[in-house]
Image (tube, rainbow, N blue to C red; front, side, top):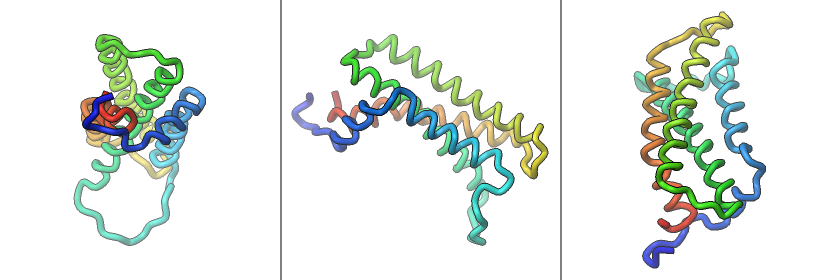
Amino acid sequence: MNANYKPLFPRLGAAITRLPAGTLTILTILAILWLTLAPDPLPSTGMKLFPGADKVVHACMFGGLFFMVYLDRDGTYRKRRIRWNPAQRMRFTIFAAVGCALFGGAIELAQDAMRMGRSADWLDFVADGAGVALAAVLTPWIVRRLFTGGN
């Protein structure tokens, strides 16, 4: 471990390794499905939002999904005491990012097909992809800082 850094959340990291594989990802997928496909998933607060707030929410949801997919995989590796080599990490990151972005596209298609008050917006899909791309760049660094102190 790098002497200059201590894990910010060592107990959280240990708790994540005790979860069954995929738990965080499944919970996040269920939340996204509810928020994106239910006709009115949250009560209206009447609060005015800035233009494009919906796109920021989409970027956060799908960036969060990538984060959870990565965290599930990283936690599984830690539990088994397997170290990722750089090529494995890069392949997984690309595969997970593409999968998360395609999931966003599938949701837009489902919204269009369901005709339950929701409609497809391809700018939402672009926002999903942007959130995933940002998360793919930041997540490995964040996970190392939060749980291992920078190793």
